[in-house]
Every structure is written in structure tokens, then in C-alpha cells.
Length: 226
Ligand code: GRF
Image (cartoon, rainbow, N blue to C red; front, side, top):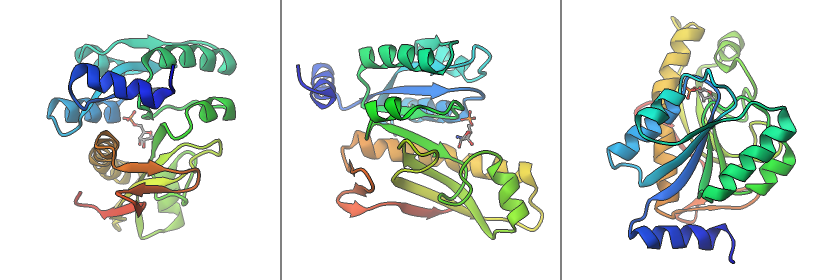
């Protein structure tokens, strides 16, 4: 019995394709999940979403999974039991990546370590600026000229970990929290599938404190037009 790398390799070989298996975890709207499923349908992302896990049965994003025929699991449980149940489900799938897409529960160091180098997140700010919540409001209040989104590997510290890629845009004088959030979200929907495709192409190498694309240090930083 090898580790997850062997398992993923066997899964790929078995299907004769290169699609990487993903598990996506959501808590709400699910627009990033939708963008990932759309990229798969458009064949710009060589992946299969094997399972969507939510901590809320009200998560609107569950409909995208159901429409795409992707199995869903809603887990209502306190933190420790939630993680144990999620881990049991995820480890049955053996995904190449566990993709956090608007997943709002803080995960324990034990859980994060279990998926070391396989847990990825998108955060609506140019990390390390504005970790945590209400990033768009805080960016406007801070008067920054640029804002954006970051795709990063997850480590036990919140909204930290090696950054894979970022997209930045100018904060306009007329922006309010909502207009800025809308503009960032449009870019998120391009950035996340693009990063996942690099994993599918086996071009990413992650170390504890750094990530590389084709052996070049990351992150790549895009300007608004991805
Ligand atoms: C996104 O802005 C994402 O960056 C953040 O939470 C939001 C989720 O949106 N982590 P959605 O559920 O994908 O629509």
C-alpha cells in the first residue's frame, strides 16, 4: 500500500486520462466551485470533482454539485467530529487536492497536517495583506491602491502558506465594498481553475515554505486581465 501519490497515479492510469481527483469544501454561495466545474466542462481543467463537502445544508453552492452529478456530503458536527467525518470521506476518495472554496470553518493543525501539500485555498486579498474576514471593506478603509485574490497552500496558520498565484486590480475611486468584491470575484473564477490546472499538469512542486511552477519560484502575480 503506497501513499496518496501512488494511489492518485493508479487512479489516473486506470482511467487512461490525466484528470486529477479533487474534493471541494464549501460553506456558502459556491461560485468558485461553479467556476471549477465549468472549467472541467470546458476542458480547460483536467480534473474530476469526486465529492463536495459542506458544513451547512443551506450552502447554495451544493446545487452546482448536484447539477453536475457530483456527490455531496453535508456534515453537521462540532469541530473535532466534523474533521474526523470529513477526513474519513476524503480519505476514501484519495484526492490529489482538497480544495477550499469559501469554506468558513477554521481547520485544526492535525487536519491541515494530514493533507500537507494537498490542501489549497483561495483568499480574497493580496496576502499577506488582509488575512481573515471582510477583506474588501478593510482594503477600502486602508486606502490601498491595489487589491485582489491569492491562491495558496494551507498551513496551520490562517491564510498563510506558500502562495501559488495572485491576481491584482486597481482599487477605483468609485469602489465600495460590494463593487470591489464583485470585481475581485470575477478574477477569482479565472485564477483558481488556472492554478488547479498546473497541478493537473504536474507542474507544481510544494515545499513547506515555498512553491514552484516548472521549478520557478512562485507566486505568479497577474494583473486584472488573466
Ligand atoms: C471567495 O471570495 C473566496 O475567495 C473566499 O470566500 C469567497 C467564497 O465565495 N475564500 P464562493 O462561495 O466561492 O462564491
